[in-house]
Length: 224
Image (spheres, rainbow, N blue to C red):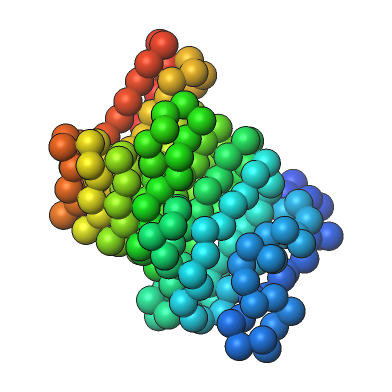
């Protein structure tokens, strides 16, 4: 009953949301994911058609859902067909400043992270998220690298992971697969879906090869 009521309450918030389509071949209104992000209104959905997108997508203080056609069809074959390649020039996704983002059904690779405002080194090879609410669902995060969080770096916020594989990423210092934590003293939450489970394996780093948790300044952490 609680879930049904929650769903009903959310319907009015999404009635005016739009779906923006992205395709490399020019068959859709946008040919780059970043262009669709820049054009989107709050709570819009960006639907990405198959292809390899060489992008470092920046999302600052936005409320968006971004997915491959797997998001609309539940066809898992679209995951491998829809690649975000960081092109060794940054994170595939750089999410920060109170953003609320859902990422679903992508293969993310070849990212080298984002230089944070706190440290000069690069963090979050595929996904860098700071002070934000990020859900990562049915994704493949592979062959990325960074100083820490070579696969995914989630700091000072909320992270939800479901059906996601994080493998073969290389962190120089810590968190080859996933680096999660807080330095500001705020409450942070990391939640793994208990049914649509994740796989995190064969990542490499100095320590915390697959998962690393960092806490400073009496930060309170909840992990589910």
